[in-house]
Each structure stands twice: as C-alpha cells, then as structure tokens.
Length: 166
Image (cartoon, rainbow, N blue to C red; front, top):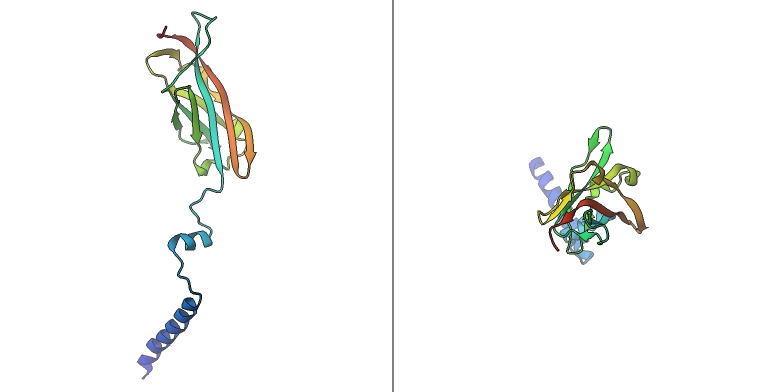
C-alpha cells in the first residue's frame, strides 16, 4: 500500500494543476515563455557606426575626392585591460559609405569614442590609395542617442593616392 502512495499523489497533483493551467485558457508558446522570462530575442539596444571612405587625388589636387565602393573597413574596440575586440568588418557601398552594426557584447563599452577606432582594411585594386598608412585609424564621434539606439560616425576617412579612372 505504501508503494502506491507516491504515484497517487503525483497523479492527483498533475490533474489539479493541469486543470488550473487549462482554466487559464491559454497554452504559452516558446517565444512567449522566453519573453516573459526576460530572454526575448528583440534587441534592447543598437549601436551603429557610419562613415565614408574617400581617395584624395594628390596628383590633381583641384579634383574632388573620389568615393571608394567595395572597400572593406573595420572597427576594433578596447574592451578591457590588454583586451581588444575582434575586427568587425563592413564593405562600402557605391557612394563609399559604410555602416557597421556592433554586436551586443560591445554595447556597454564605456567611453566608446576613445576606445574604438575605424580603419580601412582593403581597397580594390582599381583605386591606388594608400590604406596601409599609420594615419588611417580614425576615432568615432557620437551623433545621436535615443531609446537605446546610438549612432556614431567616423566621418570621412581620406586616403592618399590617385584613381586609375579618368
């Protein structure tokens, strides 16, 4: 008789609470349960880095700077004592502009303007611009901050050289 006591209690407990959950009239989906627990898949904050990459024509200074489409730029942030993030890369569009969405683990970096730098990593061969110069690292500046959405810019990054285009 003692061996049936535990299974009977379990069945009684199961039926009582299943009735209570059924009385609520709703079965929670995985997504709803995750959000109720505070682990929602919606972003709580976003940090975007923007800028543009230009090539100054040193042989013809009277001509305007040329946008560099298809170039790769990257950002790296100092995340602690002797620690840096990996390079987060983006490719410039037809106007030489880029946009980098920082991963969420980098959103809480204090004083981001002084800890993160943007630099060109690769310039297409069509453009003869010196992107390996030590002066190509550029700091970022805060442009906008509202409701967990921050936008920083590196401004115009100008490389020295000239284009093979006429």
